[in-house]
Image 1 (cartoon, rainbow, N blue to C red):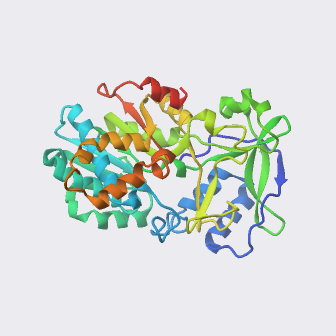
Image 2: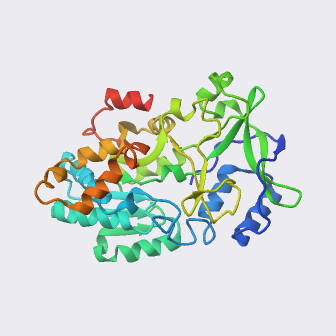
Image 3: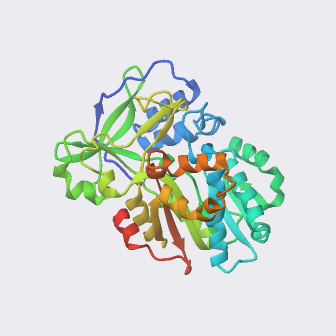
Length: 396
């Protein structure tokens, strides 16, 4: 994950918002974070979050599987069933055909969890177009060893088609697609709060009894989204929100594909809605067993930590790196376009399970409107320009 781009000044102030239980659910990680704070001072929340989620062997995502689905902490489009991956395969195949059916191409998945989505995509692609399937390299980039092992086991049947690596250093550039489902919301972020006539960053420090607590630190206004500075008077005192830098995440993909698309389904808003004055507590959420956890500093390593995506900032930072936003649609609309032929084929011989999955994925009351899909073009002349409606929704 990208390191923090924000360098707060030295002045700090304790902000008592939560109390953390004395018995941490993961004592080793708890102690590790304590020692880092003692050595280096209060942590940016992005650093606390990175350790809580990704610290090898201890973080929430690094300790094993089982976070998703009925028995986990949250649902995803993948846990709904295989139709999501089957429809993604159709989008990827459409790109391959429009790109001239290259003899060798690459799909890169980040945030692949246990490899289920990869399995669904490759299974469908092998049926839809064996030629495209035989030409593809499916690469998973996974820094966590335990997840790499699970992915390789899940995808062993695809042989050399699949490469699971910890990074991208060994890859030559190929045309293709980079994608990740619900990856952006899990990228670490900072938290800021309006205090008086300025913004302060909320960092994580230690109380007198060495429990985690919030500390307010000065922050350079130039490092904030413009809206927070130009419209500061519209935000009430105590207004809290998140800021996230996507550039460190996006930059390496330019070395993996020489032309193609980046596709990211996730939950979030365009900037005006994200930083709405009425959204006084931001979008930071923590979950355990499908229940919200009040204190984000509680039980590091045991709970999921997330925040919605500011898609406008994401698109602007991508543009600064040379990418171009080519689509921004609700998941319901995006998937319905991909499913058109499949839906027509249901007449007379319906796939009841598939149709039920489709409804969950696209219904406005379920995942269809809660999730958005953004596509970025990279050196791709075949990608259409961002439509006027999509540009209006994206706010840029």
